[in-house]
Figure 1 (cartoon, rainbow, N blue to C red):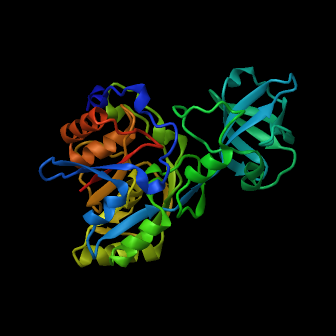
Figure 2 (cartoon, rainbow, N blue to C red):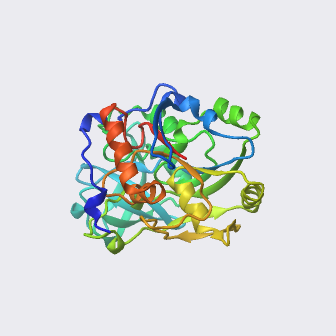
Figure 3 (cartoon, rainbow, N blue to C red):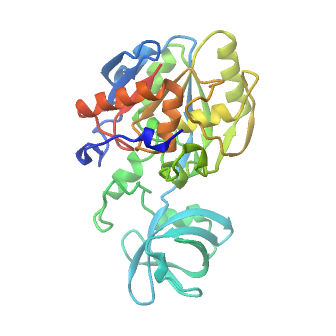
Length: 349
């Protein structure tokens, strides 16, 4: 499939820079796959589209405060993104303007108040912009990031680094059901839920299941190849616990629907599908869902509006049909919906 078919024009002012005042106060565009009908609703209306016996599947990954700043010996302040802890005290990071960094150079991390924090040594460059850093004090990465880290907002959300609404972003760029640390980007469809809405859904006898997929930077990487099939898909860790698989299989057996919250839950569900059932498992998934894919477990999904030419737009186009999705996106643009991570949501059923 030609990548250009996933293109659309979005006015820059529709890229949400802040979340809605309340999590459930986002707008919700409901797309009915059977006839292409669209409804303009609020996210708080979601329970009206769920039925007793359905199962809503959430991704319980927890976003690390992975964006941080450091200072070179020259005094230059630079920005980086934590990617992974290779082993104790050895980090893999992505550095902005990394060409300036030299092997063996000492880099001093900056605490959130801009005071000097832990020191590190630039060990080696892995690839363009990616470095391995050795921390002089080998504390667990999660502990260090709690002192130096900011919410890893995508680049289309603008913050100046000096006057970040730190606590607000750390709170709102995280789902209320986040539990398993490891993501460096939020599963954004889940950001619209608050505890009151979760309780309301549960009271309707709608079941829930929690899986984990640690969202990585590859999720937002635009497809730059001429055809989708030539795009090198990213790999992400997933886990489908036995209790979640059991719940999902019981709901399917009784005729209920599986509603995935976010494309990350969709990828997890489809990665563990075997003969119409969810198999408890964990590992790395490189599942690339493109138009023509036949879904095995997912009956509906809640998702945000995605970037043009992205693997996420490819996934929702596979689920609802490319023509129907682009029609829905143009409808959302005409009606001034807010797009991307902090934006509004879609329910596709």
